[in-house]
Image 1: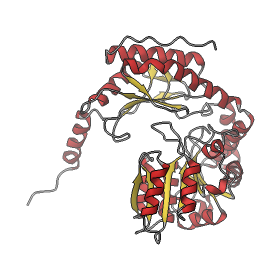
Image 2 (image 1 turned 90 degrees about the vertical axis):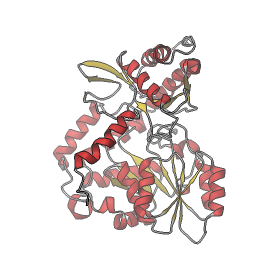
Image 3 (image 1 turned 90 degrees about the horizontal axis):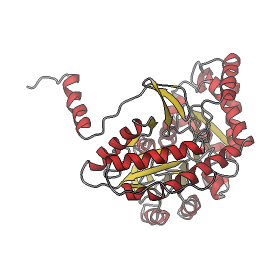
Image 4 (image 1 turned 120 degrees about the horizontal axis):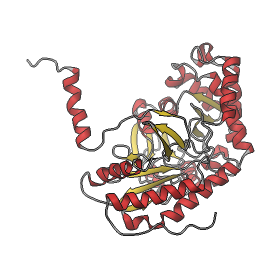
Length: 415
């Protein structure tokens, strides 16, 4: 009988395969946060952060964090249901509920935990979770944890969602799940259409708006705000604090009944130490900034427009800008062949690194096979000159790596 395989012997071939498929991931240790960071002994222009409003390094948040630590402590000390729910947590939940127009909100320690907690609390074996095909991994994992049946509809196709709803057993619980803004494509779900279909077919609707909250809408209240939805039409709204709000953690917003049910049944909430109360206190300052400084969102949209103007000719050098009007601006690699666009994406990222620009190459399984890309993310802390520098580097890197075309960057309009 064959002896037990050692841990090293079991893992080494998997790591080797990851390297061979050009999918090996590595961490980089940085100093600083925002559009300019220090890494590997030099300074970088960072265009791969989700710090959309430039708040992660804002000194006002640092001051609020220090004040919160002095007032409430650094750690929560216990789960919320034991003795870890502080005044700071309670104040933040009330502010988040008011911001999103919902009856209540519930804090989680991360967006991943929030999605696991919601889906596993609402669904069980035999129930159905109907996903947009490009939903975040945490939403799929939540469905698996619940033991629910996973169904999918074509990305961004609300009509396909309705067709699947009509075909599924009406006697089972059916939860339609979609990102608000899709993290790897930067496009937005049609929330009005999804809400209408769910109402017509007696299904529940859950939207993960991690990349929309703080960025979209007149008040910065996310995709629902931007698309004019009344809050009750999205009964389950998930948001994050670690992107546009610049801190850490997540929340779920909805009805009184929903939040009470999650407090009772969401295992990642019940069995987790509470979010740092100091961070909760700092996030109250983030919400003040979102409310009081709409010019941050205006500047961010100007950066997006500048990038799209400059990117008009990138397809001629082998990069395909995707149709996104959010701060997420992906560039698909148009080369084909097994592994070709993954290797090209990595080579392009390395060519940008030679120019002190940090832009991640996104490869499977994060995105579907054959759709590797550079994922550029813009921040309100960037300047127009940063976008100009990035685009010039992209044209140069693409000609160097792909060797296709001779397009020059389009002339920029006056600032």
